[in-house]
Length: 308
Image (cartoon, rainbow, N blue to C red; front, side):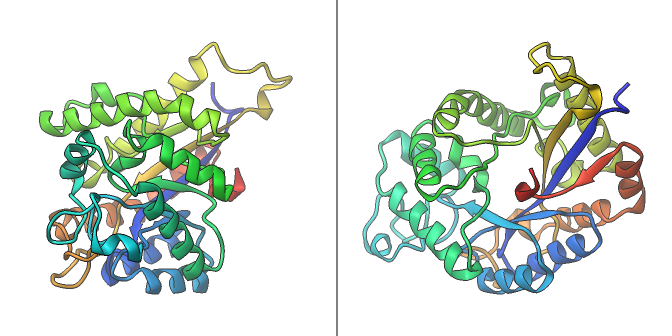
């Protein structure tokens, strides 16, 4: 039924620049045709190395804006900022969300500083920019984030609303609560991003397939579910011929070889997730030939944001 459908799939390796072993894993995935795009943490301990690798292998690269882990890149903020805790680091994934509710400043300066550093490291502006730990869709962040993208002419972002997420009974309740919060924030961000002329792929996948939950069958059922749901929506624009319909999908992944402390991180060392076997599990799943051949049989073409 979907044979006429052309699907463009962006497989984004997040956290490029986090540590040398993460960089190596992402590059290995790119060279194996398993990842088609990367998102750079400019405050990552191996960011400069990551930018060099992207240049050497011609890897499409965008910005993974980070306001929640490690140290800021904006010099002015390093001395005194409500973005930081008393140790001079960002407040953390949940701590950042708590701090926001008390009222936070300087986000715009730090986001701009990260765009500028990205430009310095890569020689170009990011074609896409999203948020580490999904901070960019938070109510207090989304407007500032959208303004920065518009100011720099960055066209694309990520809106983490995943079709079929609610049916994924393997996700533990505490994590599901976090995901549902991200989903709600994302729904409420759509209008803001749209008003600023920012775009994103038709479909986002990556929460249900993360870490130990990643498998070839999970990726496939997530993609199939999403396509069925998307094509069944009556709001699709009328196209003269079915052949001309292209659906765009971003699959968010976190492959790598596990970090070995103290190397890695964004200023305060590598976190548990980056040190776990789950990074390697994602890498090994993504490079499996069955996955690649499945893309071919489904008329799915891997690409990056600049191919949209």
